[in-house]
Image 1 (cartoon, helix red, strand yellow):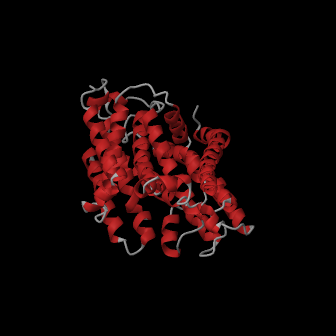
Image 2 (cartoon, rainbow, N blue to C red; image 1 turned 60 degrees about the horizontal axis):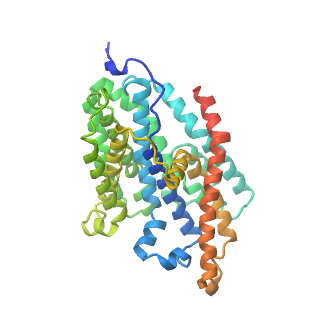
Image 3 (tube, rainbow, N blue to C red; image 1 turned 30 degrees about the horizontal axis):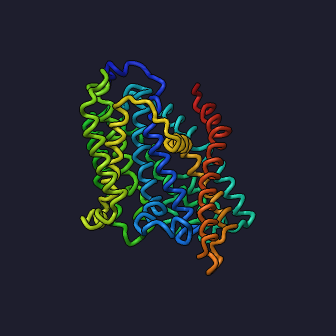
Length: 394
């Protein structure tokens, strides 16, 4: 019979870690990147005020960073799920899989079910922009709820925009479903086996992004293309939770090098994209891995230092958006598509006037604000209460 003694600092379950303001702000930045990308796709901003003023490289950074935003979400998700599980149950080995899956279900499925029902209804009503024409609605619903919408799109082509955002959720849900197995692996074979398994996923990530390049959708949306970010986040949380680092309170000396390394890697992969391409990292699919490692270093550093949140209004807004990022992510296409239908994107030569440029910029700002409001209302009055009820938490 297997015997397992949890570490002494994990003698009994807790109630999860406190929120880290910097991590919430980074999540807010990530969701902003996603929203701006979809604004650019549906309400092109080249002729907006920003399009007229910003250099091409900076314009691309602002409006074409949505994929990087999703990658950041993957790393943060892997980190927070692991970090919270260790804080709540003491170790991954002691994690009760039923309780873990119930909490994940309570967090993900209330909003997802509501969204899928609404999208299916809009499809049946023939609403322009929501009608699925490359597969059946039944197939799309099954894929959205069954963890393989990313695979379906790779086979049939992109679904309507409000459906398409669910590709990343398929990868994250698959990770959550398998997450209890990581604890079981560590229990049966030891922590080293767990780390080696996660490192295998890290190694396979760049391979998947390059090997599937003949299918552009699958190259970015394959399970292995996103699992490396989740695995890196998990590894970062395991490192941050080492007893010698957190019990007692860690020295601040190791934090600064971590934050510096994380910042440099983040800047290289996220901001200096031409440099990563010239170094050959992009062609090898390693540019995403560099970003993931940079984000992981930042997460470890932020978790290990205690600092009150900055009172800067912009950072406060990012933290709020990060706190509600899941709800904003699922619903932001509704304001974007609504404003796209009413925008002047098809106004021909008139769009080049400064008045029209201002209107395009105002439309993009309004789309961001409406997306934030809709996501915040959904979180406050629906997903939050449902999560607490389903998870049985206080």
